[in-house]
Image (tube, rainbow, N blue to C red; front, side, top):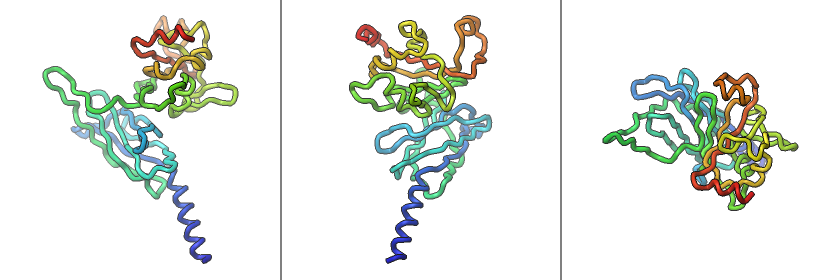
Length: 241
């Protein structure tokens, strides 16, 4: 009886440990050239919720930490402009590290000067200093607001006082379609009242002063700002706040 208990305890501990693991690999093009800046993300196979994401470095390599929770299978994805999206089902490993090896992307199909887009838009796209979340990729309830959506985005955290960080970096300003909402730098009114279903994208960039934006200077703030983009034809949402 004692041996059975120890066996079950060990199996349970192993399962808990296996819920967290590091996913590694390298992304290349058909000519075996490493691709820097490819977006790598992992989704739940059950409901397509994005669980973790990352970006490839100069040698095309990536390493992302994943908390698989109660998942047994995940969907691994790679997105890069000019190439066909890559997807593959993976089993949650029993070890704390899983190597995808080399992932080779295929050139985007083009016919009659029309680019054929295969698959849905990725939930997260990383372009230089910008992280862009596709709002429709994150499930929200009918009455949810912008704040509820932001809380579902990987890397975005709210502390007990309502301060926001993205990947541990402080957010200094929140804009709606590139402008301060009702003159509020932190956009509290927008966050608490703007319906989540009118939001197209959430963009995170380095915070710039108005002068830096005007002159095109680089940011030196060390903080971030969030821009909430509204879907076309949904600007009337402002009128009901």
